[in-house]
Image (tube, rainbow, N blue to C red):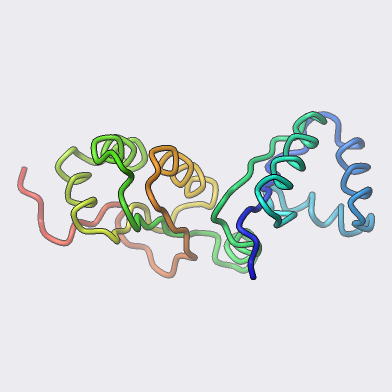
Length: 171
């Protein structure tokens, strides 16, 4: 069974030797650590939430920029950024408990109109962003999960517009 949390290492910060030592202490070889650090940002450990937050806290204490993501699959970063598919899609699967807060989050993420944001919620599942960088997708996912919306990231296969309502929206 897949564990639900991934630690995303974005940057090692100013104390690279300490971060390298820490990662070596996790059982990684020198070449594995160097390979990992050459691919930043990258996911490096999948575990339960408590363990992920512990890893993140330890690395943050060393000055690294780290986040814990509850939904990103272990190999998502590798497939998106290093498999020749450097873009992904953000799909809204379900609105959060407050429709208004979800609409605000959609507007923040997409810069769409209030009407378009409302249409997106009415038509879930809906693409919010298409063919965006993994970093932009993760920022969108974070903003939407703050309002408890259900969001999915997937590898992008096309270059469609960012917000694409199912019907034309009157001005």
